[in-house]
Amino acid sequence: TFRLVDGADEAAFLGVDKRLQSDFAYQQPGLLRRTTARGQGDRAGEWIVIDLWGDAEHADACAARWDDDPTAQEFMAFVDRSSLEVRRYRDLD
Image (tube, rainbow, N blue to C red; front, side, top):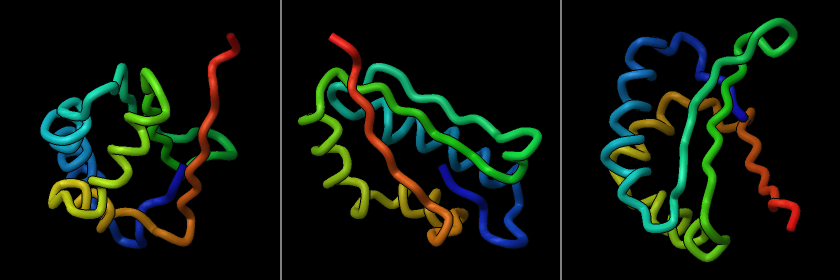
């Protein structure tokens, strides 16, 4: 979850998010699904990106590539890093 930086152009953010999804995220081995959603009600102003991975190793490998990818960094330029929370969950077997 995260918030956008103050004054961010939401339409521009959504454009970068769309490119990130097609040009980076779905190029990563093991990614099953990715979705972006905007918070409502008491979560207004908050965003969430949910990535579903086939296994943790692929998620880790993607995380290692994240900082070197120009589109990922363009996406992160919209993110208020102080609001960023990354969480991992595991399917119930």
